[in-house]
Length: 217
Image (tube, rainbow, N blue to C red; front, side, top):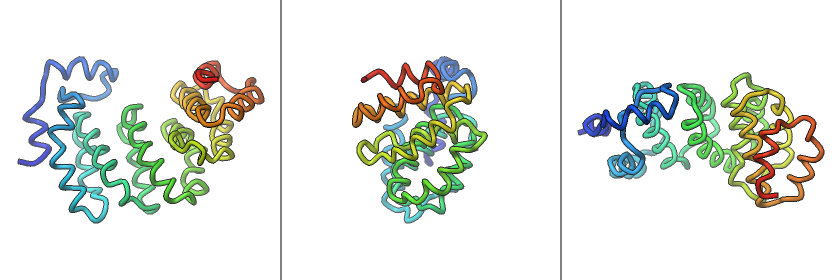
C-alpha cells in the first residue's frame, strides 16, 4: 500500500472540518493531526531518505497536486528529510512550489529548507534571493526576510537590512510580521544591532513589525 492510500485510509471527517476552518477554508483536509501524520509517514520517509540519490520532484509535485493539505505537508516533510540533496539548480522549482497553494503554513515550512540550502550555497543570496526581495509575490518576499532565522551570528546583516527596507512599506500583514519575526530572532544574538536598526528606521517600519521585533529588547 502506498503512502497516499495510507493517508486516505486514515482520514477523519470530524477533524477535517475544524482543521480546514483554522486555515480559513483555503484547503480541504483529511483530518490528520501532525503526530498521527508523522507516525504514518515515518517508515516511508526513512526509506525515501535512504534510497533517493536526488530530489524526487515527481513525488513532491504529486503531493502538491492532490487537494488535501496533509499531502502538501507530506511533500515538505520529505524535503526536510532530503535537504542535503538540494542544489542551486533546484531553487527555481522551489520558487514555483512556494507560490503554489501558498499560505503561511506551507511557506514557513519550506523556508526552513531554503535556509539550509542558502547556508550551504551563500551565492544564492546575490541571485535568486535578491530576486525574491523584489518580487511582487508576498510569500517570496517573506522568505527573503526570514530564511536566516536560525543563522544567529552567521546572519548576513547587510542582506537582512536590504530585505527589510525594500519591503517594510508594503502594508502586507505577512510581510510586516516576517520583518518583526526576523528582527526578534536576531535580537537573541545581537540586541544592540536590532535596537539601533529599529531606532534608525522607526518612521518606515510598521507598528506590527516594531512590536514583534521589540519582544526581547
